[in-house]
Image 1 (cartoon, rainbow, N blue to C red):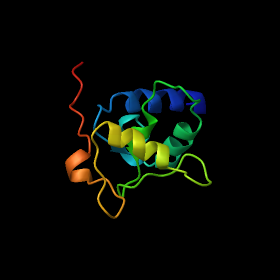
Image 2 (cartoon, rainbow, N blue to C red; image 1 turned 180 degrees about the vertical axis):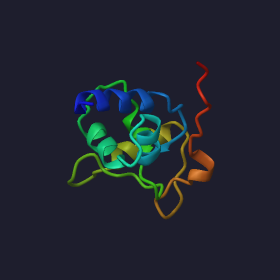
Image 3 (spheres, rainbow, N blue to C red; image 1 turned 60 degrees about the vertical axis):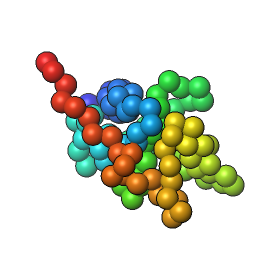
Image 4 (cartoon, helix red, strand yellow; image 1 turned 30 degrees about the horizontal axis):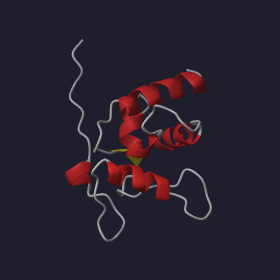
Length: 110
């Protein structure tokens, strides 16, 4: 499948994450039918344009940390702010407690 097709699947999976919850890059890759392609999920999130409706900020790394979309001063601050506005709390270590805020999708009925 083409990269654009994979990105569409990734974005569809990310759109399912509810407000106030997070999912990992690996989890989104599995939901998109791309197990083992967490890095591609990161590339897809980084490729989004400003103002997108895809909730990119709800996708974090497997350690529960924000992975900055772009390098430089303040990288990752915007993502943390968006998550905090949705009620996601960060531990003093800077991690999101996945056992509390991690999203567990229900199986889709067919």
